[in-house]
Amino acid sequence: MDERMNLNSSSTDAQLVTLVEQFEQGIAPSAAFPHVEHVKVAFAYLCVYPKIEALERFANGIKRLAVAKNKPQAYHETITWAYIFLIHERMTASGTRDWEQFGVENPDLFDWKNSILSRYYSKALLDSDRARQVFVMPDLPSQP
Image 1 (tube, rainbow, N blue to C red):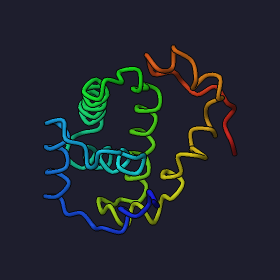
Image 2 (cartoon, rainbow, N blue to C red):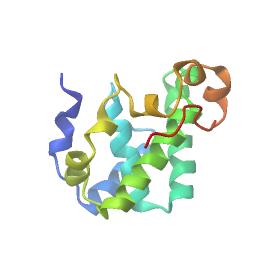
Image 3 (cartoon, one colour):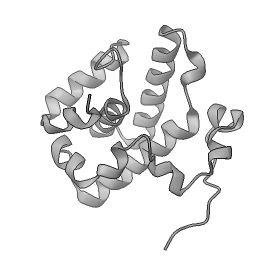
Image 4 (cartoon, one colour):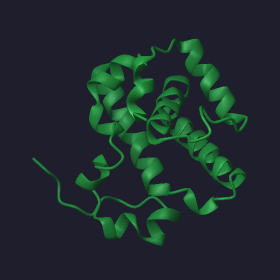
């Protein structure tokens, strides 16, 4: 199944608010909750709340979901925070709050296998317990 499939459905502000409300109730968009849906929920939070509140609420929701699935170790602080900040940066740069447009403009955010984070973080750092537990700054040199 193509994880990008959901990118083709446009979302209104009301739909994004509903997505956030459901997520806060512990309801993921799907049972599998693939990477593209993580990005969409993060995008929705950033449309509904200021970035720091969005970060806190989204991270807490991911943690709750991981615990509910009996996989608390699945939560990764650095990945969660880094994606929130990358999504926010891209939303600000493009000025968009439209999910479909955002998806078209930012395909690199949706490739989990070849994660954009590999541009900023070494595999060793992202695989570390420290990076799972607290946000760590990137360890790879900046790219021009």
